[in-house]
Amino acid sequence: MANIKIPESKIEELRGICKKFNNDSGELINVLHSAQVLFGYLPAEVQELIAEELNVSVAHVYGVVTFYSFFSMLPKGRHPISICMGTACYVRGAEKVLEEFKRLLKVKVGETTDDGKFSLSCLRCVGACGLAPVVTIGERVYGRVAAEDVKKILGEY
Image 1 (cartoon, rainbow, N blue to C red):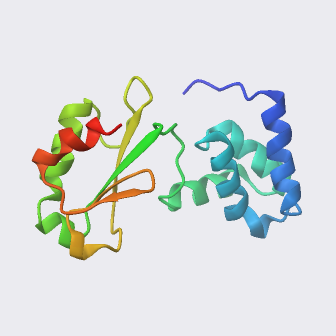
Image 2 (spheres, rainbow, N blue to C red):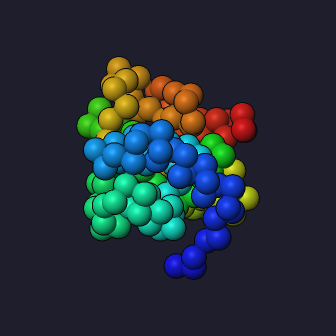
């Protein structure tokens, strides 16, 4: 994977985030969360700088990033789409909904469209089982989604 060049201003902002949490290794998750808000994702270069600032190993930072599904090491689209694959959603057809998103967007799970508009992922449970199957796009929640609804939903964006 090619290295990304982080602008000096962003490096200073990231150092400021670490300092805000007193460069405390116990605040790693909070630092990573703030860094992901700043960059949109957590590339290796960001993880390395955080490890250096918090005086922890890069392997430790990487382990936390890969353990929690909230964190992403790949850039996400402006409108991140997540399809719930929890039991209720799966039983009610979430897989067909996912297949339709993949077909229309021409991406696989974990990928972002070429124009950077959408990224596609799956979740375990949104906590809205009564609305199954559930799709989230950014902060917006769509309930009782059928494959036939996907084109209309994408049309809103």
